[in-house]
Length: 261
Image (cartoon, rainbow, N blue to C red; front, side):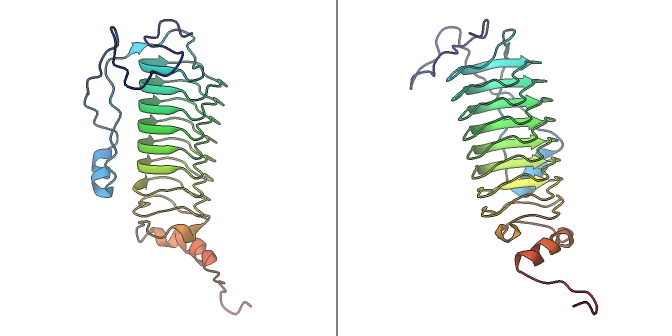
């Protein structure tokens, strides 16, 4: 049990359940984003919707998730969720700050209106999860597993995503801003209406992915894998120099200088 958290951690609410006494109805608050993201969204056409959060109650000390738990309208500050295992968790209107999620296993979790800030989710497992209106800032996500996940209206800002896996995930209106994605994999991923701004994309795997309107402008594109799958993506002229070796390899070109054989 989760002590003073104002919700039930046992089972999901039945369909059509109405808020009962003591369950506050959410009131939208204004959130202007960070680092001029509104201007970036306007230029790139992603128009990511931020999470809607209201006054949140502090979670009880030592609160950790349980299978099929439902957690809403609370905040977790400096919580320790290292290595926790909980499947089919629903997290709705929750803020996390300075939380340790290292190696946490939360497969098939559903996160709606969530903000995660200054935390560590290295090697966390969100396999086949659903993320809707989620904002993640200044967080370590090395090796995070989002394979088969559905991400809609999600923004990653200044995050470390080296070796992250988004294999066969579906991304809609997703932005990566100033993130390190080196050696991440987007194999078989649907990346339509996704933007990467100021990101490190060295050795990223894009094979068999879909890129209609994917915006890569302003990111470093060194030694990409599966570059032939980038049809429909948007790049700027300066990036063509970095892309040239990968494009040449993708179409089987041999580059020979001078009199070399």
